[in-house]
Image (cartoon, rainbow, N blue to C red):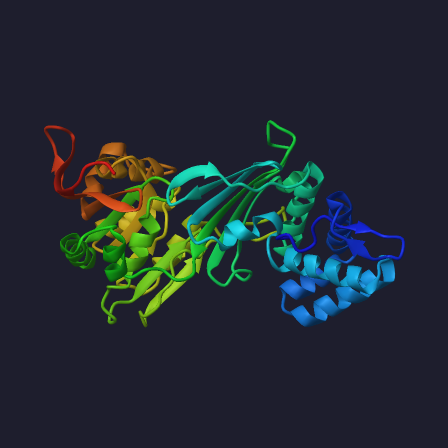
Amino acid sequence: MHGVFLRMQEESDGSIKTENSAREEELLQELVEDYTTGKQQSLMQMKKGQLGREAFLEEAARHIAAYYDLAQEGRERLLTAFEQYIFGYSRLSALIDDRTVSDIRVVGYNNIRIKRKGQRMEAGAAFSSPGEYRQFIDYIATRNQVNISNLNAIQRFTDNESHPDFILRFTISMPLVNTYDEPYLCIRKVPRTFPQVGELIEQGMLDRETAELLVSRFREGSTLICGGNSSGKTTLLNALKETLPNDMAVLVTQQADELTTKYHPDMMFLHSLPGSGEQQVSYGLEEISIAGLTMDVDFFIIGEVKGAEALYLLNAAYTGQLCAATIHAPSADKAPDKLVDYAMYGSRYSRDELMKMMDCFRTLVFMEHYRVKEIFTCGGWDEGRRGLAYTKIFGRESV
């Protein structure tokens, strides 16, 4: 709402003056509720592109004139606040616009946390009440055509359309599965444009010599990039894949649309499709990875390995397919253990057999605080140690 419709109260003549924030909140919440319940169809039509922004606002203006006893100035101010609410993200809009913020976590209506440049901190923003926060949850669910109910108490979805600079990945868990009686909301902001390798050098993620090393190894063998949340894994993978030759056919499978291309002419992208309810069709990362491996490709990428798709990635790399992926792991030499843990879901292979197959990943990269911290090369299976042999080819002190 950004202070546009703040601290207003209704006068006897129907006008509004800037004094009573409670009345202002009440009017705006009433209008939002109108559109998330009785007039939900209008929101859905707008989301699907069947109703333009101007036409939607004209309809909202008629609705305000018909049902809200306000003078012309008051109606205009209410419409302005409503426009910013509907086409932005209410109290969170400023945080979503902030390029230094990568993640937003709403732990409670008055407890909003962010990650800015890799550091967690208070957001300096809050919803006015539990009621406003719950209404906001209902609104973003409606806006993104997501059903929240006891059958769907945990929902994950992506907003690809609302923001010009970011794709927004939402995770919502409702009180049915929460210890406390409030929803939890997490938003991951994925930049629409990503830096190329040269820009990563300028930003200090890696130096030129390390970049040349990684680009060379990325083209010649399979690569696994690991690290914690928001450590730069996807950013690095996005940049490296753009260095692949144009005569390579590349397939990318991912849970959300984080990996995109700017320049490569032969790069295809598949994303998973989560189901919602018993009647919904769903395609998980495992299913689309299996389908992808039947295609004629030279390079196979999984955006982030999180489950049984690891086995298909490992099999592809082991049979000579060039592959790359990211995975959560605390260090480069621990990444193979994590990948094998996932690959064992339903696998008929023993752990030792899977670990021996891991020597096909010739390059292991560890990211920390948006910087390349370690690079290992795998020297194959050491029978005496019954483990993989690694050589560190790059490393720097903790940052």
